Picture 1: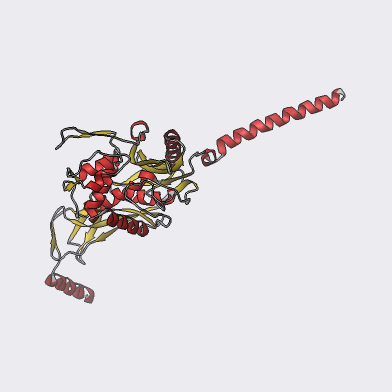
Picture 2: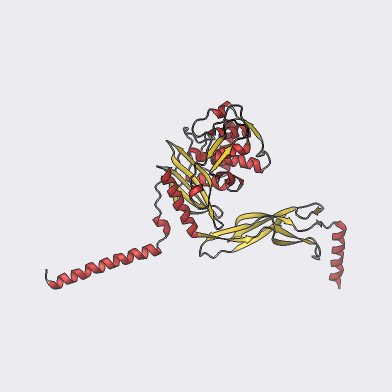
Length: 392
């Protein structure tokens, strides 16, 4: 090889190295971050729960054992009963022998012990108590079997097509299977009952009422302590299921929900969930579009517009959307029928919020004043006035 050839070959090698470096930098800056996410668990899913946007998925429809993540459905049925008024947090529940004998994680409840619904919810959300899950299921449905029937009925209603529950605890049982996608569906529904986050975000709790030895509860979800904004929802582990989790966190008004199934260790589970939620927070932002007690809409009660009331928002409402994306946000009020009058502060309907024409939520609205609904004679006089006005 002569000197000219060697020089040409050297230049070619240098050129190739420069090109390689250039291409690497372009990919590092311009590639979608999603391509760099490496989830070690068997199955995973990341969703922005308000819009329902799926930001990452890996084998999200693969049927797997969910372990104690099952208890998301247990908590959902409990919260729906509470928020509908069928059950109170203060209701007393007597612990059965069947509940006491549950193996695995436990509140260490005794047969005949009396605990409140709220205490049992704490036992489920914080310590993943199998005894608490069975006790609350028996209280709501009469027996564990009847409660499992309700669990499967509710899962069907939520569109959880690949789920079959065999118990309320998540203990291994033939055919007790679900998917990351289905877990996401029931987790999203549970998030509609924010009271549960008060319990699932608690790291440690002690229950002393009526006991000689206190019940100490420690959260199995270590992310509530170590991951900024994490406030739930549920972890799980069995030898069959390995390490599972439905994790949620909120930052600057944005909420993320990550589901992990089949991780080989709790460290892998926590790392995967944290990585996915951090990715989600990097992609979305939020804006408050309705402020609690602010005017939402003026409702006219007469044709002459001299009788009206102002709808006011009962709570804040935040819209979450993808960063850099132009979205159209609109609102529409729906007013309930009322017979004669409304009092100041009475709930009168709700306001729906739309992003690009899709409903993303609603806020209850109340009246800013006392107002009587126009009666027959009032409407008659108004109509007669209109008739004479039109004849001029």
